[in-house]
Length: 380
Image 1 (cartoon, helix red, strand yellow):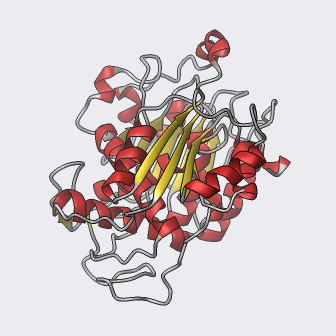
Image 2 (cartoon, one colour; image 1 turned 90 degrees about the vertical axis):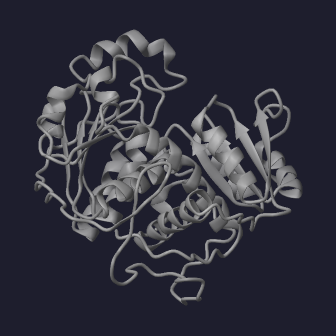
């Protein structure tokens, strides 16, 4: 992995910028969805490149054989294509009850160095729903780089499986698996990125607001893998970002540089601050996550002290736009957000969790088959 993308021991402070308040979205077209919230679709033309109602479009991008390590590697059309695929699967399987199994006779290896609820259940049940077989592998089953080299492990896995999802401590392990093996590697979480979570977040926001372009997302918390992945996708979807982190816990400098280039290219803006209320002001979406990621337990006392004043409450929401909503990737800890905000009717956390399944299914399917959508394109 390039050293430019590694997290640094000392993260530099980010200069503050300027951002426009996003317009408040008004009327939208929606399709009823029994579970996981309403699905909004475009009334008019299907604005992204793709297969419409199963008819091939030469602009639909084939992703067969690619890796899914970071959304940095996917352009705006490809990110929208993945979200459209997720929406298509959700409508067909969940809403319409269609049995759709294009991955019959396909096998996935699910490697988990870190424990998980949503990533494991969504990927294991999702691959099964598509007709495939998933093999769950913990550290007790497979020791990456311990009993045999990662290079050898990647080659062995390629003999048995069609795709591997790996949840790892070191992103460089994903790079090695991708470089050495001959099958697609999916990032189930690393210390730098968690792209599957960001796809679910944007699917949830598209369903809720009807479109994404022009929204402002406020991040309040650690400069971690979740915000890094949001940063790699938000500009491509026309979404502005306001990021509040304590001093010393800012986002990675190279990730920030990449995001600033994306924002310039796509006409969005990014704003950084050390004041949570400043970030929440006029934002459409308020997002937070754990302050203490797995592997950082020894830093718990130090981090809780550093994040004093970052606990989200309704007082922060009162500063946001009139149509504000709240997201949290879960699990939630008491110090991050109070119960009033977390359980309020503006909180979309359960819909967000539900969408983890449809987005990982979209990724698996896109890397293994050329999927043809049969539902209208969402409005982005």
